Amino acid sequence: MKFLIDECLHTSLVTVAHEAGHLCDHVTFLGLGGRKDWQLMPEIRREEYTFVTNNRTDFIALYAKEKLHAGLVVILPNITPSLQRELFGAALSHVGEKDLINAVLEVDLAGSTAICREYSYPPT
Image (cartoon, rainbow, N blue to C red; front, side, top):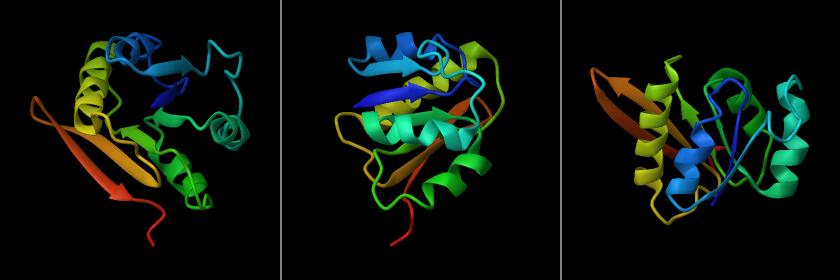
C-alpha cells in the first residue's frame, strides 16, 4: 500500500509507514503544501495513494464523488505528533497486508486505547 500524508499531520508519519514496510509520501515533501483539498485529489488518484488526514469533513465529501479509490485513513482527534504516530501505527496494524479499496478507516482514541473503524465508502 502507498500512503500520502496530509499537511495537517506530522511529517514523522512517513517514517512510521516506511518502518511498517509501506511506501509513503508527505504532501509537504511533494511540494503540494498549501493546496486546497480538492486540488490534491488528481495526485491522489493518479498515484493511487491511500490518503491519511485528520480533515474528515472535507475529504469524506471529496471521496463521496469517487467511484473507485485506494482508501482514506482519518485520524480523528487533533493530537500531538507522538499520538499521531501511535494512531497511525494502530491503523497500519489494523490494515495489515490488505488494501483499503473503496474504504475509510477512522482511527480515534478511547481513553488511551486506539479504536479503528473501517467501512465501505462511498456506500454501495
